[in-house]
Length: 150
Image 1 (spheres, rainbow, N blue to C red):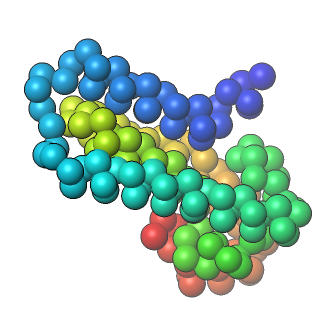
Image 2 (tube, rainbow, N blue to C red):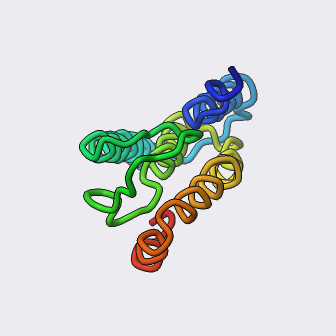
């Protein structure tokens, strides 16, 4: 049961709820400014959703799992994975950042590095250890060619 609760969308949802609560109940009149934050926030949310969709498409195309706690059947290095080893997690961070900007949740900004830390510690590092063990030389080559986040 814990395996299904400890997944990145749950952590993203927790960050979004915390940012919304901060903006709603402890805004203190703080804001990012008129239009630029709304525009940038919308672009980040949209970009994050597109990034996640591209990554899921590529993983399905290669017939491998996208569940973080499962062992993948294949090492996916094509498509969006040529640019980032973790486009889904990057998309999660973009979505949280976008909503924080759009909602003017200024005091929610520390949630961004917290989410990055959680994703890195709970998912990225263990996943890369699995990939390193299963696809030894291929993963080493991939890790040298492609950055972890951007």
